[in-house]
Image (cartoon, rainbow, N blue to C red; front, side):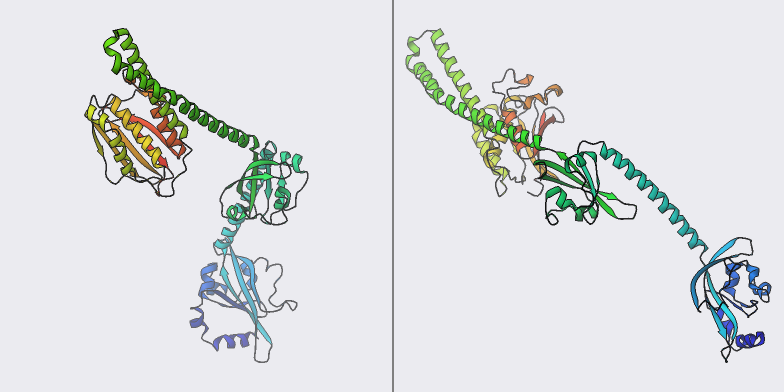
Length: 488
């Protein structure tokens, strides 16, 4: 049979053909002696054909071949593909192989030998083993993390639960168990919200994308409102589950509602009182003026001084009440549908304050192309009127220049009102925005202490903030930021 196999080999240009195949190849006779060994087999094992051909294949110390060889076993159908084994390399190292084996037949159908094709998978096996170890290690870590997470969640007073991608609750902390009882393996939308179907605003699709989701929901079982934070929770099997933490915000919402109502009542009270007090001031000021005009020649200096003080006090009270009315109505004006041109607003304010501007010899420079805002025009007039009045009252005595500019940034619209006066001490930079609080520089200047408080209230109500910094070279720079206005 060996002569037949050799004839079989010599009948084909194997040497030339086998050099083009990137697979180790060996042939054995029925005595399991190697009769052919190609160049790739030599590269994989380190053994040249001169040392291999003629030897029994057990020479390679194959595993598991040394225990059982399936090449000529009648119970195993041929060919056999993708089986694993290993052999000893010439340098003594074990080489992992993946091989296919089949039988060779003569023309009469008699078995004359066998053939094996094999590739070196040592490096691949190492990578697979490393991957398995890493997966095993990470699995242990995740299981440890989840045990710790469970312990943390059990210690919380907030309700907490975990549900699967199939909406089934797989974990509940103690606080939730006390409220709902044992409901594991039931659907979250049934347990939490009493619904027969998935919630319309179900956060699970976003959770699968790795995003956190915040919701406010009323839970039927308690009749209370909760802020629910949904977070993705990685699993050892590579999937994602949803962690929901529910914080009871019923009292907070009630307090917010009560606070809003209290503020509304206070604003209404201020508006009513201001209006009712303003009515008697008009005749008080008018009669004072009439007495001074008609009877000054017959009055002594004390009487004239008293009438002048009555008129001055009445006018101060009138200004104060106007400021209080302005402060009270902030927040009662709806946001306009279209942006308001700030340039037009400033032109109006400048005309309104023309007498004071001329008297103080102020020079007001307004930048071109100021950003428009979705803020009521009447409140923008109040805002810039108060800022300009402030600059005219405190700053222009040292330097008449007042600069107004605006810019649209990525996340906000910012305006600057810059003066070059005495500036604001650091200790007073927050206090000057409080009602009836005035800086030390205002001791010699008349005013109500309401103007900058009105500015802050307007800005805050329309998602902004106002602050004062030092002008380079001296003075005060008021920065007004409107967040959420970046798109105009």
